[in-house]
Image 1 (cartoon, rainbow, N blue to C red):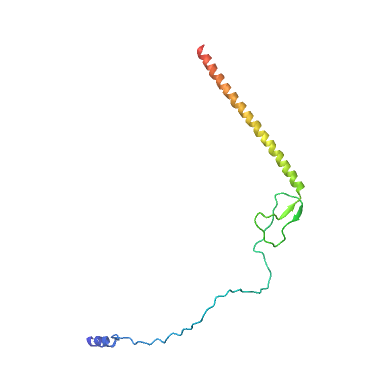
Image 2 (tube, rainbow, N blue to C red):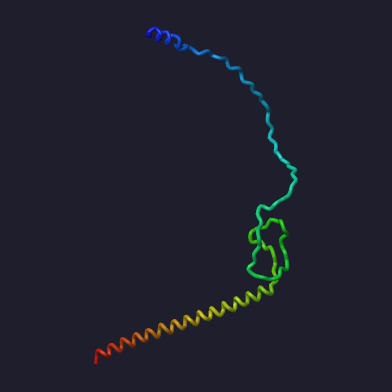
Length: 138
């Protein structure tokens, strides 16, 4: 057994130096570069589809008199798209202004009534205090 172990160790002993392989030289190509602008051109065919569709909703009803933007054109925020007939709109504005004036008058009247109530309460409190004082004296 000892002999077989020694024999096995001799067979499996490592090699002192690994063989060195030569590396072939690298091939390098050298080229001179020039700076230039590129203008790529593409020729495509197909159908254009909008990225998103938007439906217009109006707060007022009425007749349109003018369309200021053509379909498919890019628009900026707050840009006027359509013009409406002013007749119906002006009637609505006048009605709203009349309601506003009525509400302002009602608020003014309510403030006056509140001031009267406050003054009346103060008078009543003073009267109650006077009656208590008279009741104590008699």
